[in-house]
Image (cartoon, rainbow, N blue to C red; front, side):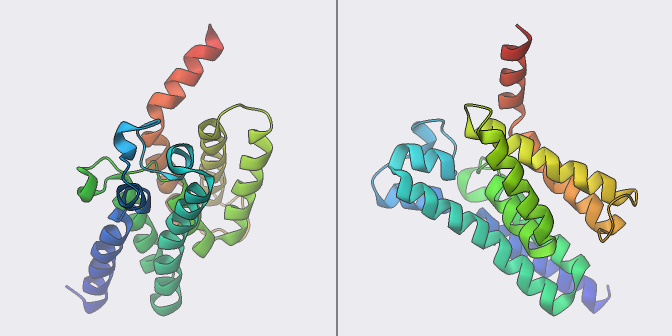
Length: 199
C-alpha cells in the first residue's frame, strides 16, 4: 500500500475518534446531568442549551464546530484536498456514531458546518444564512437545521454535475455525502414533521 494511502487511513482513524469525543455529554456529566435521559435525549448543542442552559449550549456548539473545522483545516493545509475530505467525513461519522456513546452520538449539524467551513467556507456561510432565515419561519431549530443541511446537499449535487463554479466533482460528492449522513440522523424528525404538515 502506498505511503500516502497509509497516511490517509491513519488520518481517517484519528479524525473518527476525535469526532467521537462528545463535548455535550462530557459537560453534562461534569454538571451532574445526563443528556441521554433529558430533553430530546440528543447529545448535541440544542439539547445541551435546553437542559444545561444557553451558555453551555453555545459552548457545545463552538466545540462541535471547532472539533470538525480544526482537523479538516490542518489536513487540508498539510496534505491537500482529498485527505481533508476524508478527515472531515471521518469526524462527522465519529460524532454521529460515537463508540463512546454506543453508536448513538449527536445529529452532526455543527460538525458538518465545521468541516464544510474548512473546505468550502462560502457554502458553510450560506448554510448559516439559510438556517437563520428558515428559523424565522419555523418553530423548531431542528427543522431549520434540516433545511440548511439540505441546502448544502443541493449545492454539492449541483457542484458534482458542474453547475456550481469553483466546486469540483469530488468536493460536490463529498458535500452530498456529508448532508446524507446528517439527514439520516434526522429521519425520524423529518417523518414526524412531514406527517404533521400533511394532516
